[in-house]
Length: 214
Image 1: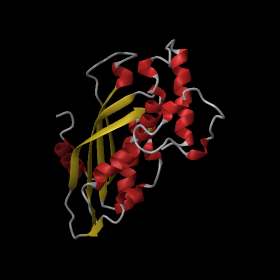
Image 2 (image 1 turned 135 degrees about the horizontal axis):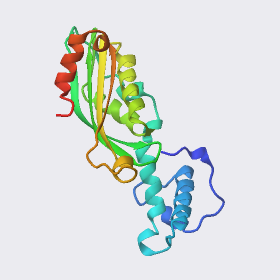
Image 3 (image 1 turned 120 degrees about the vertical axis):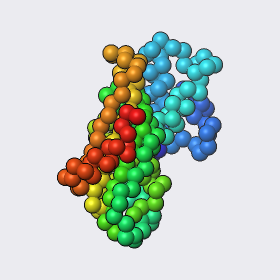
Image 4 (image 1 turned 90 degrees about the vertical axis):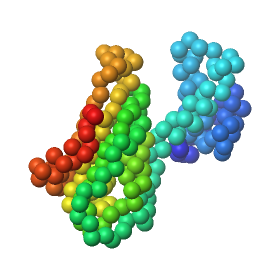
């Protein structure tokens, strides 16, 4: 959610469009963002008062609040108490984790999948927490390179494993809808920590299991 302390305009046309259409009433940040969307529509030459756009500013504000919710909280809160003692020293992988994020350069979406693996050193994490870690960092304005590193660093921080490997494959609408307009170009990034970086056999096993591009 947008923070409440962003401030609120004293008056705003069509404030009724900010009603609780999707649940709770909007906070001050969402109201301010909706006002900016209304102004943006006017700059594009649109009539924000026509039927199809009357509620668009509120919807856009609520959608952006959802899409950037990863700024709130801490990754340790995402993992919670789902860390368990276990004498297991083989690779654990969750692959094909769907991800959706927003390019910080054009504020257009990029989407794809992440493959996350680690080798425990006496502690494992609930499997659902790896996708949640990916979502936590993806739901921000991002670049894919930083997102990949952030996921790897988070797993490394909360588990202190022998190694971590992360590969992300994604399509970027800033390349598909504008600019070079290449529809089938996929960006692949990786981040390796510990034995995934230092041991060639572990690295090869990880990449084979991830089946990058497969």
